[in-house]
Figure 1 (cartoon, rainbow over the protein chains, first blue to last red):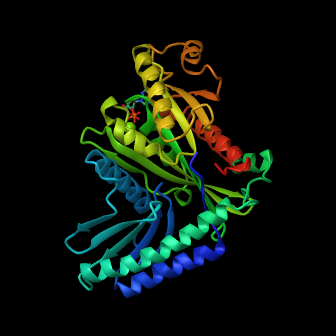
Figure 2 (tube, protein in one colour):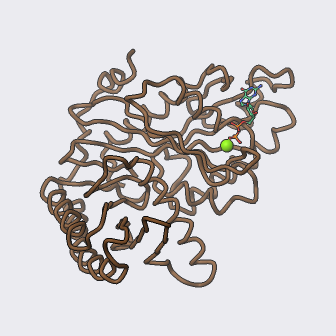
Figure 3 (cartoon, each protein chain N blue to C red):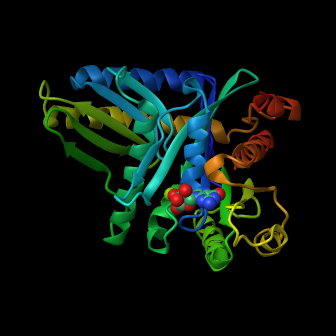
Length: 159
Length: 197
Ligand SMILES: Nc1nc2c(ncn2[C@@H]2O[C@H](COP(=O)(O)OP(=O)(O)O)[C@@H](O)[C@H]2O)c(=O)[nH]1
Ligand SMILES: [Mg+2]
């Protein structure tokens, strides 16, 4: 089975900091980091009016579908996607083949600047995720749920 | 593949409803959506065709509450049932933590049930999962219809390993939450084992 994604305090703060900085440096509206299975990892910028859970799931669906298309034509994947809207546009980049960086921006910035800043952020994120997977593989990095009881599980469903 | 965040103290798991076209997968999610409190659920997203058939997937995020200080969230997905959407079905199985197979009890859908079960096994294997090891439940849906096959017969054909199974009438909710709870429990029990992969 694919190993699960485990996020620790230290890396989580680093990741949030990268997303925050990217929002500012690229002059973007929102930045999201989503895992390829559809789980939201981090969000920065004007996220108040966005359904972030749905966005994460649809991003993963889109990346998975485009990955399927890529393989059909003999590519491994399409690492970058750009979708241009009337007001807002969206840029997606696959980072370290595991997560997807999504930037939403409008005409207060430019595609060129966004691309440039994404490149830098994505290099930083790759390093953080490498550190995370080393940590997850380290001995003793067991599940926090090793201790849960049947009663704990039953309690979730008691109403 | 669950996602555990120690920092925000959250755990997210992915459950996929699988089964032949029109067996009632989307109806299960719609019922769950209609019966849960607004604060525990997100939007129900359906990527469907104009005739309301699932094109890519339905998606429903649900929060179940806390275990040992961790918020537990389940992301429910359905797959499109029609044979020609096999490519999309494979994608949705990526990173799955638990599977519900929804069978259509009608006698004329028995072939389709068997075919879909086999398709599930093959597609899971392609993603590196073994159906015999993944948290897995079966739901015999459409028990209200006069042409429904007996449960004994369905069990014999679809459930030789005797995994948890439930009878259901999805539009009225019979068996819907029992099925969800059973699979969620299996997923959490699997996590307890270490879930390292
Ligand atoms: N009589 C009856 N109809 C059902 C039941 N479950 C689903 N249906 C109907 O079967 C049709 C297909 O259901 P849907 O959920 O879209 O199937 P899906 O293709 O598996 O997503 C719809 O018209 C449902 O109302 C059931 O238990 N009994
Ligand atoms: Mg459907």
